[in-house]
Length: 186
Image (cartoon, rainbow, N blue to C red):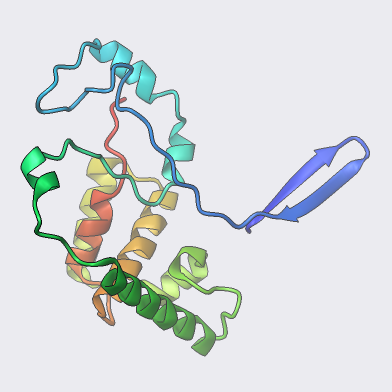
């Protein structure tokens, strides 16, 4: 709904609250759980306790989870660059225009990007084929995805398809979107 309501004894006020949150956390108290070069000094129970400090429902509302790994010196010092920022920006802007045009065409002017879609829009604009359904069925069971997470994966898959310039969501778009779900213990 992109609003926040503050209720007090004297009444309530509603304010707009559209934002993007970017957050970071260590995987454990010492910060080295899962590191391939530095030994973690935490017990498994300490790691689980630490990771459970953020509630499941809150984690479920985060669309993209990334595990950051140590970058080797050779890669940091390399003169070989990846894709330049201008190219990435152009691709993102093109995808956003496609999304806005899609929603305006179908009479959804309040929906500007895939992240704004509600359940009805997800059903209308995030159709998947049989291979996609099979992947999502397996993911729901193996990853214990909630209905909210299922819709978030579909919306992210739609965005990945848009960034690739693809009209429909393919199984590889869904597979990539599933890789961005949390992999915490607990």
